Amino acid sequence: MAEHHIDLPDETATLRLGAAFAAGARNGLACHLRGDLGSGKTTLVRGLIRALGSAERVKSPSYTLLEHYTFSRLNLYHFDFYRFSNPSEWVNSGFREHFGPDALCLVEWPERAGSNLPPPDLEVTLQVAGEGRRATLRAFTPDGEAWLASALERFSPS
Image 1 (cartoon, one colour):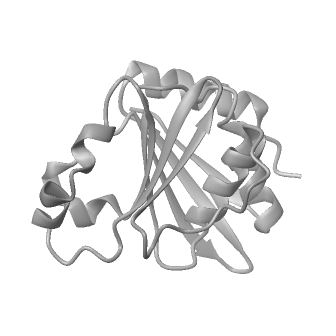
Image 2: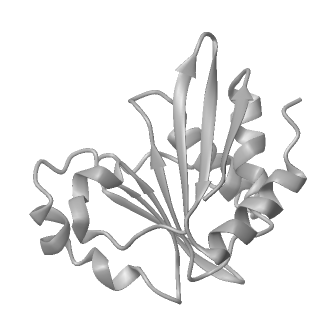
């Protein structure tokens, strides 16, 4: 498992990183997004969703737990489990049915679901670094490696 580190000097760079993931995005993939509050997880998702062609407002699903976006070629589910206080809440949520070959799942705060959540193809960890962010990218499956390679080919920090 290779690890890649990318410095993101500002919000625009975080949006560009998210956009770089759009070309390789497809149903059947899952990405876990880790980082403290305000680290840029939703901003990264916003960049990906905009690059897929959506003009609608992309907001954090912190209160709704789930935002669904449909594109001609994929179903994208954006989850935020920050409000879960116990992993059993994920089991009782009915979200398990969304994970599989018919959806692209982006999950903020995956650790709140514990071991109940299927493993990701890709993980993005964001940390505040001065005025910007630092992204750590890890692929866990061959599909995740292909998705990450596609994004790294397309990403330019400026």
